[in-house]
Image (cartoon, rainbow, N blue to C red):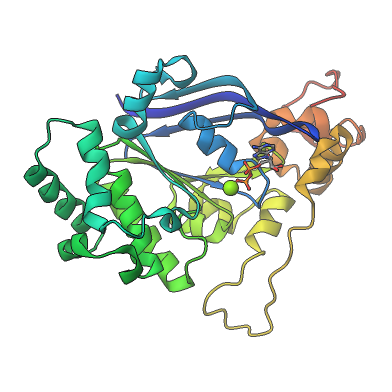
Length: 335
Ligand SMILES: Nc1ncnc2c1ncn2[C@@H]1O[C@H](COP(=O)(O)OP(=O)(O)O)[C@@H](O)[C@H]1O
Ligand SMILES: [Mg+2]
């Protein structure tokens, strides 16, 4: 089976003291073995919520609607035992800031061996040590680092250890949530290359999450751009960055300095909109309508946006011109 991850119309709502927070509002994605899918978007756009939903790691306060399938299994219908097996053997995760969660008083070898010994209880100590050496080498670390303590490693090396740990039980799907945040730019590029090479060599499906669209576009086969819990634009990585259709994607693409930019006066541009404003359906329509006034790009990528985009812009004929909406189509009032 080639399809590792299917997400269909996922909606995640947190119940909190502020009331209901709709963090993800109808996202559909698919990822095959050997492919890399990126989720880009600024903080608060719902990226980590999707990652949690894939491994059913969301808090009790979250209400999940829609379908998440990992290696053919409906994640939300799994028993606890099956979920536990799924989490290491089918899908594993490298968490945001995970390198800080290494235990300072245990060696790297002991920590990488733990998932192997827990999930494959028949493994002998010797076989586990052998597996640890193999995993460390897979992520570009010397096998001798098994004897090191976390404080002896750099940030980039620690993040490599976290990736080695995630791979301990041969998962087919790897979810990496902001794996390079808090690392310097050169190390970021190295870690991204490690992930990319592993995906290729092992034929993994890699779901890579980052706020940095430039980095994701250079690494991923396909990238989705999220804002306020919805997918704004989607396309092949390199193409999406170079030829962004939606104004928000363009703003995100311009939000990070390019290394070696010859124009020293270059200043990153902010993305502008506050995702929190997406609590208000009228704000969503306003945001989407900009594209209809612009060049209709988002209507091409996401025809379902048309009904929101057109509501306040009845004179915009772009969607009907494109044959996306019939001329007399109904508009809706809420997302
Ligand atoms: N446990 C939670 N309870 C209430 N709201 C939450 C919780 N986790 C995340 N959120 C809210 O959901 C939205 C999306 O968050 P998140 O998925 O972490 O975004 P990202 O990873 O893109 O920064 C944000 O508005 C955030 O404040
Ligand atoms: Mg996050």
